[in-house]
Length: 114
Image (cartoon, rainbow, N blue to C red):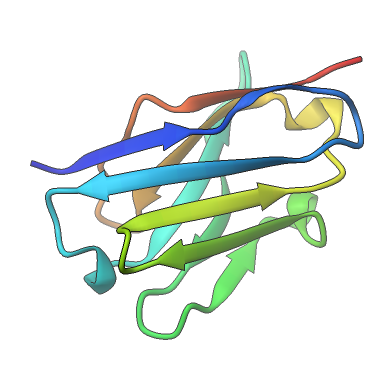
């Protein structure tokens, strides 16, 4: 049974930082590219970042380039999203998923507000 558990969200002021984690189980983690998505109230879910499984190549949505960094730890079956210089428009529920194969956790809420 595929399980993804996101954590690390919270309330942060504009310009602040957060590090999200996504602990996984139920599949061979090292065989899958992984992605972070987010969904803001009233908006569709959108991709934030992806990391490949073979060589850890990362790609980012334009709206987070230079501010967010995605990484993975195959020993811990976990992906991370380090977020810097957060903006109010980054407020959303953040989810991780297996790229192209799905499976979603409950998400973690990130709120950027003064």
